[in-house]
Structure formats: C-alpha cells, structure tokens
Length: 146
Image (cartoon, one colour):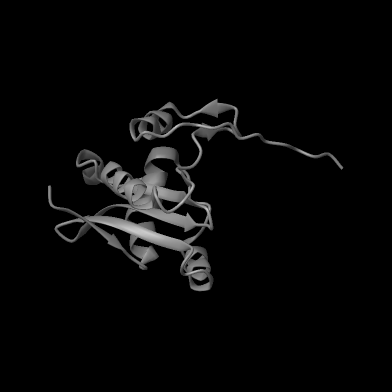
C-alpha cells in the first residue's frame, strides 16, 4: 500500500500531529509525558527510547514510542490518524516491530488494556492487542496507608 516505516528521533512530529490530537479526540486525555519530557529522556537514554513512525506519501499516519530494556520492550505510546486508521497503519507498525524484536528480547509489552485504575477493561484495546497475537497478564494495584 506504499506505507513506509522510519525510526525517527523527531518526537515533536508524532506528539503534535498524531498522539496529542488523537488522545484528545478519542479519550479527552493527554500523554503521560509532554513532548519536552520525552525529548529530554531520549537525550539521556538514546538507546532505550525509540520512535517509529509510519508514513504514506511523506505524511505521518501513525507512530509508536518504545522503551527498550535489557530483556524486554514496552510500547509506551501508539497512535494513528484517521487516515492511518483506515489504512491500518498502526497494526502494520505493531506487526513489524513485534517481528523485529521477537528474537531479541524476552517480551514485548503492548501496555495496559485497563481503565479506571484497573477497575474496567477497554474492550477496543483488548481486541486490537489480541488480534495482533498478544495475551494479557494481570497487573495488581496496591495502595499503602501510612
């Protein structure tokens, strides 16, 4: 379909044109990290924070920010534009990255599917991740009273 994946250190492009608008549109939310914070973290850990974007005719359609650890990879941010959604650009990127990293690390964490501090499951996210071959594992939440 002419989709092109690029590893890209330009976090601002993904944050400002894909991630922030899409989170606002879909969830009325903001990313946990600001673009300035992710740029700073990347400057301190350039081998551990990676940005991969999907382009079609030089237009960004989707992206994923990865945190790379010794034995695993965590997808921290993944988002797509409306056109990217129609072209399944984010699925294409996830499948490509899963194949790229599957023999290099013990796990590829695609992030949570829970909402409301673990009290409910986002069925859309769960369906997407299961369609990509992922399984889920439980994550416990604890609160300490001092």
